Amino acid sequence: MTIGRKIANWAGLAVAATIILIFALPSYRQGEASIAGKTAEDFTLNIAGKPTRLSDLRGKVVVLNFWASWCPPCVEETPALNHLEKYIASRNALVLGISIDDDHSAYEKFLQDQKVGFTTFSDPAMKKIENNYGTTMIPETYIIDRRGKIARKVIGPQQWDSPEMLAYFDALLGQS
Image (tube, rainbow, N blue to C red; front, side, top):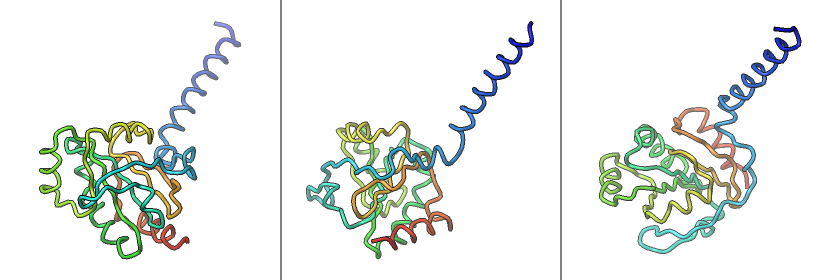
């Protein structure tokens, strides 16, 4: 093998390793800067039996979390979402869970078993909303600021009540 061919092989490996590293970095998976600042996709849902649009929640910070009852990481992060809801509720913010369950009884059982304390909505038609948001896996969460803009996209389960996350929400909730 010639020296030029060896250099080309090593360069190819270096490029591949760099791409893998970029995709593996938490900042890539947890920030997704490409959608930050975009207006959140509007949709209709029922909250407490009343038809509501996401845009009706402008003025509030919304933690929009897509989940399913059959998803172990969703179960894992539910207690932290409950704590986050309690932490932010008094400051004009809410956690809004969107279940993508097809089985309504499984959804109801999940709410009861996990003692879900945040607003949730389930409708098999929500898959369209999930697709419109570009959700590729669950849990997946979009943090929407008071102006209806996406501040951050978070892929995978999080410890929503960790000191770092609470500091993030304190900063976001302090903005007008």
